[in-house]
Length: 435
Ligand code: UGA
Image 1 (cartoon, protein in one colour):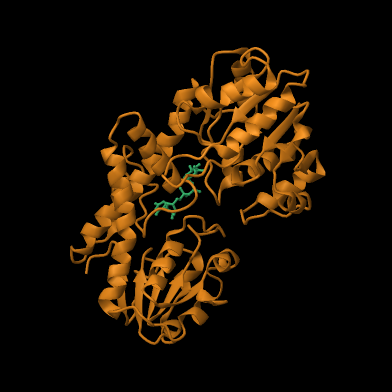
Image 2 (cartoon, protein in one colour):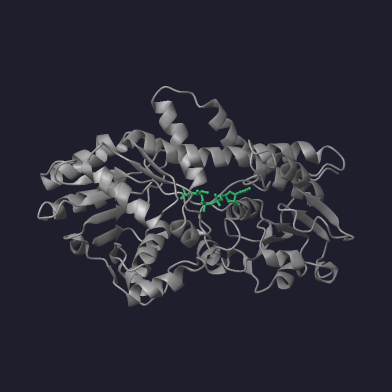
């Protein structure tokens, strides 16, 4: 069986690496030549635990990486994993996926096989039937369901656990018309993921499941963040004890109740906006989703207010931002709340020093010489008037009194309650802890 994966981001590269490491014959295709050259050498373009190990194993087997789309010609399965970012209005931007399926259509027009095309990219409900299917049929001059299969196959992996999630997903969703291709894919996934629930449904439901998943996660985060604000005005209240306890109720569940400066990353913010935009377009006012988004934006304003309350006017104040990645264990800064914070503080003319264990290079690409880059946490604290802990990197837990003594003003805003259990003689403000 020959498998192609188009688009080598977190989803595509993890999938191509895992399938080829398992022994499948895989072609990984991406338009970015330089990226392909690096991946071919076993180097991942981003930091993701265990990815390179699987990639190298795959390359030793039958993994081929290329920017040449023609390689997909004789594929049995074609996974599409290209990005679907947001446009300036917050709506989904389908240009990359349209381009990819146009090419696929052209190439399969000449194929003697009956390939199955699986769309893993997140697309708003109706996109498969109204956009992707017509493009494929027009370009290939073939019929979906007869000459080739078309299946919605949304992805639920999280960055930082991408490999584990690819190998052991909690669910597999396959959506499409009831054809032999759908049956074939059910068998394929049952074979590689025995004991994992396989949900077979139609396209629009599969498309909606993905948005339901991400918007529910975002809702959980905004919920706990809102409660954390209430807790801050209840002397002695502790949001983590509350989250831990309600999490024990199986109807609630303990995950995604970690209060912080708001959700970021390349998925939750974009998918929330796309779903809100989509709901509006089909005549539904998404009041709850709007509130989730608004609560998320407000969370960062609260952090800035807290800084200003203590420092007054921020002009020329030295502020240290600890953690710039969108979450720990990644170098990804896309839609990171810490990056947003730095942009806002720079507007107030504050002087910013940053440190992140993995994301410095990416941070530098954005801010260049506008901010100062430190090599260690303690360096970043020197002469600072305020340190903001944005990301719960493990190493920030080692922060201690002697490191803090290097600060000009011993003032810490702890958005992740990393230091909450330490006895420190400092001005300390933690999200979700009542003063
Ligand atoms: C998210 C989803 O979790 C995945 O299931 C989904 O497949 C993926 O988007 C996607 O659509 O591609 P990811 O972007 O890797 O995965 O990030 P998350 O781990 O969900 O974290 C998102 C943001 O929420 C981060 O900024 C994180 O710090 C924040 N967060 C998360 C909290 O503030 N509190 C929590 O309890 C959990």
